Length: 507
Image 1: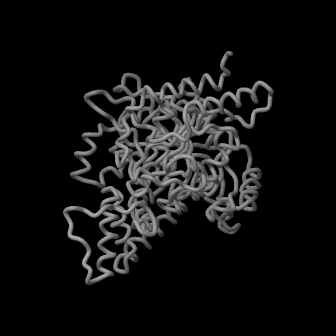
Image 2: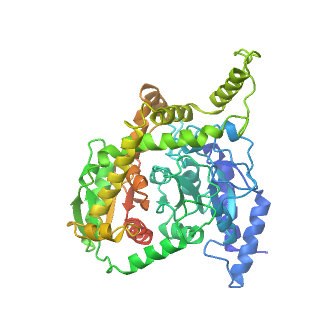
Image 3: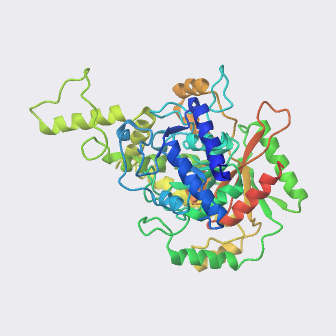
């Protein structure tokens, strides 16, 4: 009996998973290979009968291991949740299954999504397929496992989470497409929280078309998620988009603040070449200013740890999470003080189960929320966040669809507006892991600079996608460079359309 197209494709993916297991992309599988192939065979039958459930029916989709599934552990790459099994799947996982997608397994990540290189994990660092025996390179993070699985064809597409660039950065470093939709358009129900006001489920695939196919199946309102955009607001966004004139040819914005000395020359060259190619196609290029960009990264690393310190407070081994065994090097809790004994158990459990990066961010977040620091740090960071959003609203031709009408009318009067913004996704190419660790010991904050281009869209809740474009010919070994397309809130379809045009530059 000949195998159908989907079953053959699944067998190829499973073979890749076995051959490339040392790269550490996957941490667990939802089902065994036979079950996966049976699901694909059923999808092939539906295809043959002309009744596929969706465009992704029978396709293997990997799930980042901080998105809950009911038939496999959800560890968040943390010792705290090493054996945790969710009693229910995340809404996005339910929607994938209802569309006929086959869950390929759970992918590696930085612990609780905190990191930019997928090295802060109990499962071991994820290695780039560009690595050599002499130089193991990072794949970016925190959704590095998902990006690597897609980039090495171990699955058709993957879900990740994007808090400040955690889908887009690894996509740029694996030659894949990484899409962060507008905040609230995809359900967060069943996603283990890092920073609630920033976390967004994202999609990684090898093409923009495949990315859009997954997005179309999992978007929509979820009454279980309090941050999900309501049906009435979604209808309002659609009316707002339909009221504008066709944005073609495009007016493309290039932020002057993104032209920094730290940008790798080859990435700058690829960016310039892409803009030149788009101009040759009839689009216009406009310099714009996003002045608060210089403060965006600092604001993000105040706000995100502050929310994380609150979200992770429940992990104490008593109310939630694994309890650490008593350390042989520490004295037992004093029987004279129950309170002191409880505190000893809590602190010991949290210290042993949280990794260094998570502990560092909890301490930072707890400090910025303290009475002595909240005014100088947290509240100021919130003001910077508002200014970042206003910067974007000022330069986009399309007004923000959820702003009050008076604010939108005033915004529409601003000159020099653009339809879309294109920038690099990262400052540099993937670093060598050993060099990264040495640098990290000297200056832990240095790793944050790679988020320079991705954080602003996250703070403003805007749609953004990283797309691979041809690199500079003869420049090192990098064939692809990740460029980022950003649009106004709710303008996700235009962002993906422009991404598809950028993608075509390499064909």
